[in-house]
Image (cartoon, rainbow, N blue to C red; front, side, top):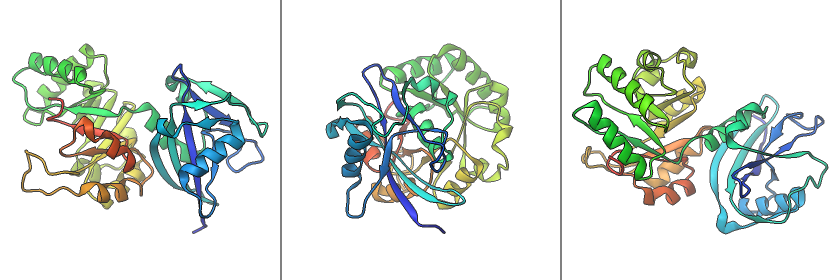
Length: 310
């Protein structure tokens, strides 16, 4: 296996919420494509120091470290090169970005990112920018009206997506509820169910249990945009990567009231697993909004939670 090249990169945002892209010269590896600015981490250099140095050299800006947080780590193996992308989200900087090395720059809205061509290793970064930081998983409810009411409350509490996890319902009833919530809520609805249910409900996002993940042979059988799965170990995480899933949940991080006999893996184990695979990973299990900073520092995309929002 070729030597791993460690790269510090940044998703840099302006006041309008646009992210900065740089165009790679056709002479470079993976040239002729757009990328997130950054460069190689030198021996003995911290990742944050490397990021600051590279962005000052390449763009002429100074980033505010207090407004800079980890976004995602992406280990990726090209046929001729292996890279580890250490990517940060930069929300504040001084100076006016310019292509100090002659590279074209462009400010792009998040919604337009999928219209640009990136190196393959950048796909998880794009997904991380498009995905939410908080997902509410539904608990029990007595009716579709109650699901709608509680879903609205979950959004008011800070959830950006909803995951309908109604395993107590028959399949046809779960699909019916999913359609109604999908048509009523502006936020993305992620159905926790089978591929057949996801396609029948015409949801944009489908979440598979770990058993369904291991049985799946091809992600293209799902007709929506986002396909994710529940993972608890390395085998399941590798399966998700092999299938090209868009994100996963990793659990349990902490012990929960619903599974008091199951001890959590803790943040150290979560970090080791989350940073070893090239896709966004959500922390699940006893999570609250107050865990977000710890989650980000541990390499997570964000949190999924039932009790926090439901």
